[in-house]
Length: 148
Image (cartoon, rainbow, N blue to C red):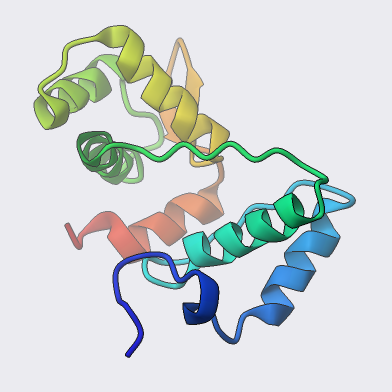
């Protein structure tokens, strides 16, 4: 039986050789953005890519996951941001405080930076937060907008 809910590693990682080889090849030339709905195996694939790169002694990989509260806040923010052209930063901070119980603006801006680094959103100090691209915004709406 395969474990469900955790990234597949070791012998549990199966049938993704082509995807891993493609990503490894692409990384030699450029950056890679891996987008898919929840539970499609993105983390499992990237952990295998990480293992391959570490085995070759070609790269040092740093992995930073979000805490449960930060992830909940990120999802709540993205749900709001996907519904408008620009979402005011002060309202976004209010959502962050509500979801995390934390009123540390610096930590909030760290989360916004993380979401920006993941190519979800960008921040315009005059207008607010918006999705990085219309395509990504529409994708988020379809998969997550009204589901949570």
